[in-house]
Image 1 (cartoon, rainbow, N blue to C red):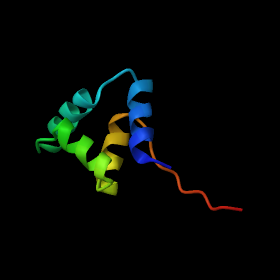
Image 2 (image 1 turned 45 degrees about the vertical axis):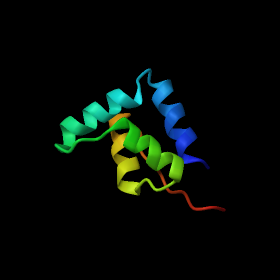
Image 3 (image 1 turned 45 degrees about the horizontal axis):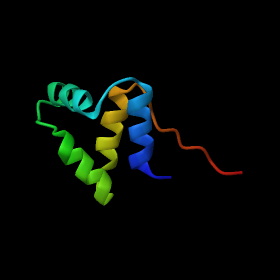
Image 4 (image 1 turned 90 degrees about the horizontal axis):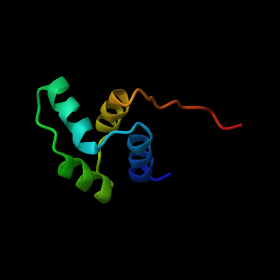
Length: 69
């Protein structure tokens, strides 16, 4: 699974942009969240799980862990 492509797909499915997501996150957290910063983290695969969870929260998604059978 490539988190970069998954997030890009979810953002597109929701008809929004990373810029809008970052604006919401900035407002929500009180810390400046820049789109190019998130893009670089995704490209380098250094994005934190917490940051992914915050983005998913804005998009109204969550991660579910399911045991393999």
